[in-house]
Length: 129
Image (cartoon, rainbow, N blue to C red; front, side, top):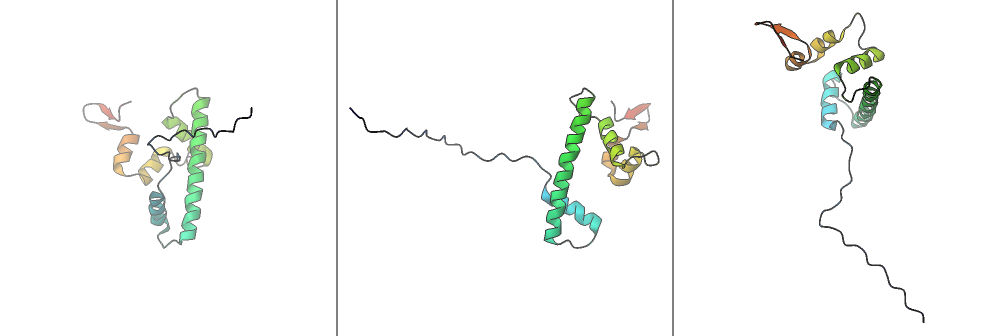
């Protein structure tokens, strides 16, 4: 004999709600702050949205390039040499404008101390490798 169709039981959800996973990114407030610092004039909201999209795309491409350079070198860690190669390919670092000059020109002193080796008393070099 025919039996009536029964609906399949719907599995109950656990108490934890599922959130969409977002990929990490640069905070829009940071992009806005940096852009305003260099523009030195008011920026319209529409223009800022375009700048934000461009900077996100730039950082994605930058990270892909660094990943490719590191993979090509047979390493799993991005090193300073990879960043310097990338900056040379972008035309930011040249023979006339070395990376150290860019670091001294654009970064605060606490970051300069971390990136550029400095000889101190006692025959020590900071930062140590």
